[in-house]
Image (tube, rainbow, N blue to C red):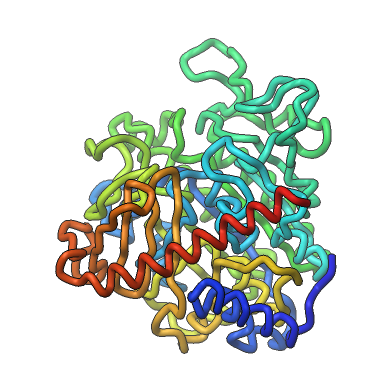
Length: 469
């Protein structure tokens, strides 16, 4: 993989920023001297599935118990405005690994498109840096077999969307194409052993056949811990992507936690996931690598369902849910624990995104982004980690179906008709998006809509370039 020099990348970043009118779009990758502080950090990207912004104890849920996430919120950075790259899962996952909005390369929704070969993933970059790389849990960025019927799109002889994690930089895999039940993941709920139809794949043509019963989050973590332990013993930095299925439907849980929550499987499977995060943190400490591990947690989008009924997911005061570009669909729990680098645990109100993972990690390693004409949509958050970033230098842009939106440090524009008309909200004063200010602040709305139009044009150009390759 060809890499640009620091000077070449800064020049390319400046050209991209001028095109997009989003000055921090790529240049932020080299904004801080992230490298040069000793050994390379281990990196964990941990993500839940359909967990609402309000579905943690630290965000004020009155019933749900998440003691390990709560502890992380007190020990590192608690992002109070952290955004998934999209209001549905597949696009968000692509943004985590590439630093780019998935509309640039065709993953426009769940079960649509796949991770293209020409995209550079974080796993590929980190392999070049000597990292052990592992993917565990839900992939949802392409199919994992062309030999058997599997999950949503895997079919015999069907290779159009075959794009497994082992072909995108991951050495160790325990991965499903899409969802599974959150208890007994290989069995269809309510049946006497009927197969669910989605498999855990460990490599080309290889499926897991043992230790697949009980809580799915535990099943996943049982594969993560040996990976972490082996890398630590070998003195090798590791990159672990842990994408839990919980609390996505089919939401099922075991008796112990169901009894704790009056038979509510949604709450039970989130607490089950939280327990596994606790197991992972204990292993990091036991292996002596906790302090030098950059441990991120977020959800892939807002909660499922048309409304909150007291027993499902909560976006709390936020408007909208999964599939919506109102904040309830894209603002999610977000945490970062990194003891060696985060001097003072704190909440931050700066808007941040899953697209920021890629440039932040590269900045922490002191290297630039891949060479080429394609811009990044994320920025490096290393200045925020080090306490020098108080505002985001460029907005966060979204597109999903007929919805588009742009979010800056204070304001948000939203359109549900493909950009024909826009609403304007002050997210600082009105996080519930209850008062449309477009008529009162037309200059703000118009300026933001122009920037969004430029970003959308850039995404179209990226997609066309991708089709030409």
